[in-house]
Length: 446
Image 1 (cartoon, rainbow, N blue to C red):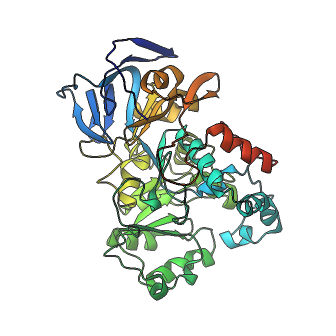
Image 2 (spheres, rainbow, N blue to C red; image 1 turned 120 degrees about the vertical axis):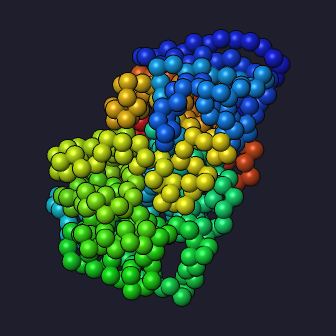
Image 3 (cartoon, one colour; image 1 turned 45 degrees about the horizontal axis):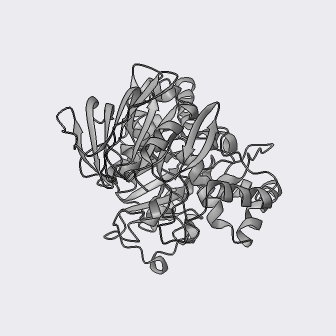
């Protein structure tokens, strides 16, 4: 799915707002160079990002671009690592917003409510109609257009997840063991350690829903986790809304991680996780959208929700330098994938997100970013989404148009070369099937 053909030199200038991308096409379909301002853990670096196949091979001002590579010269934009949504119930993201009429004390209250059971019926109907693949891929498209290249929260049993973005539990082209990441979203009391054959010498990330709520019942789940021997350095706790200082101290002592979904917490419980306490004790925090029904529409909105809580409730306890790591380095570490993704570095996968500059500071720019500001998204060296002219210049096979708040984009969904079910479906086919079988489908572009 990469550019090939005879050598030709063309310069195409793409302008929308302040971002400009000049494309010079080369002959090697597996070689790309992005020149611009790159956001790295060590600060902003201006220079070349060289991609060969699915991997990054060089980052910095001293990288020599291969002569036969297709080159993108990017100005007035920021080149980020592909974003990682640390937790999301992916297949449910085709559902619209769930708007409860009251707040709850723990997750079992709303999950057992008549209102929620009625709300999720359309999803259950779709699954019965064998449209699970379409539901997942629709959610992946929603994530892709916000610069997300890896997402956590797709069932490992899903048969069609090797296209589009990476589903962390499904070892998407990452050469890891099938038990490298394990997720448990049910009541921790039901986790049978013997039956589940939990082996932390193999499982490097145990992602677990825990203490979601605000009452003693929710908080007591932490004690259950410990009693079962599941509080380890490999543990990443999702939500932790009910946790206090004692629990965060214990998490820090063993090296456990935290995944935060503020918007969903606020919608369901009226308050969110005590992030200042977690940071005070040295617990690494990642951000996850959770899901469309009660979470944010996209990762940018979730960042703004978190920033608002930080200003209004946490008195600015989350430092400005923490926002970018919360959707890049930190989730890569929490998911035990930091040797594969999460930063722009040689040897890592070429998962790249390019955003139009909205500020001279990359963090401030990120917090101001809207969906229309996403210029390019690469997954494993494949340009899968971006401004239409850039995608058209880089791809031999035509992709599909997508209008995003007045900005013309192209999204590349069909992957006929991938030997997984339904990989040859297009965006139009997926969306059409879901619209035909669901009365209130969440918009692809909110």
